[in-house]
Image 1: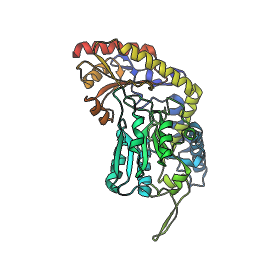
Image 2: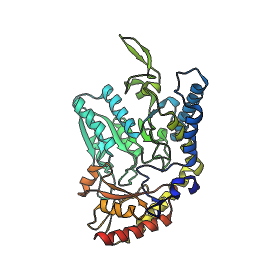
Image 3: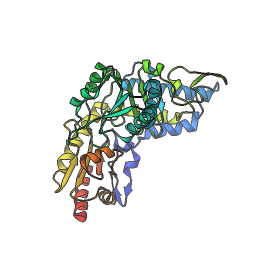
Image 4: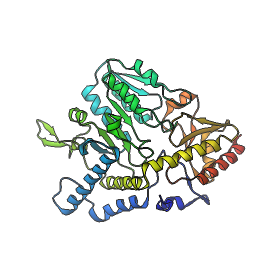
Length: 400
């Protein structure tokens, strides 16, 4: 990995070198991704699948090559199990809507966890309201570890699906999703995994996990914004109803009846973000060039070092200290409000995230308004963590 591949990191903010620690919100993009996106619009910009002319055929070819790249990246069995969306949020909404309309009825139950992002709470609440179903929640302990031992008692013959995050965007907890899936499948319950915070940080093999659905975004793995993936097992995708209606997802249309296209196009209504999908392929190539295991090792070293150094600050409280964590540190210092801390860090050139991080139930669990969150990526360094620690100490002196 060459840090110079990310030109945005070379700039100054308020006359300070930029330290970018907001990677859980979105990662920066290497030049090869930005160039691929620009080259698409410069050379082959066209709608795909339905054109006989050269540009359309070339764009279609590049689009489908990207689908194969995603298939290989997460080790799916088939190309047609990869559905492109606008992001993890739309992917989850797709599963909730299409699975729900097909399988969920009054009195049925859906299980999620207490540490979910709002994107993996609200769509299931919509579904429960529409269908008269019940939402049940797996709790987590005060150190941020999911209480998997309570899962068995939550699963009943009425449970129709379980949806859980692979990695918490706030706590950093890496959940034992393979074990969770095994338990759920023993009760004949399918499982959807929100992998938005996992795919850029650890290897993902959907066949080894045996998950039924796996959802994630491109922009959190060095790809452009506007593209996401919903992986689904062929069995479910064949049985589920389409999410949206329009072009591409149809086979025939009359005023009397519409028949649907084959997989995966059945779930890809309308014009997709072709350039962004091509950029996603380049981002995968970039990550593979660095090596996902190398990325995980580097980020874990940053996590351990950052945790160690931040804990030296008087009044430091880290929210989420599970034994198995990704490179996310959420913290509070004394009685300083996280927003005020974030503003002061920004004026020292450091980009962090403040607030509830779209996980208000987590904040309710700890009875706090929010946290400051520093999240690391493959281009971050220990020297940048040193800058963060000094900046937090300086800000704390001003706020306390």
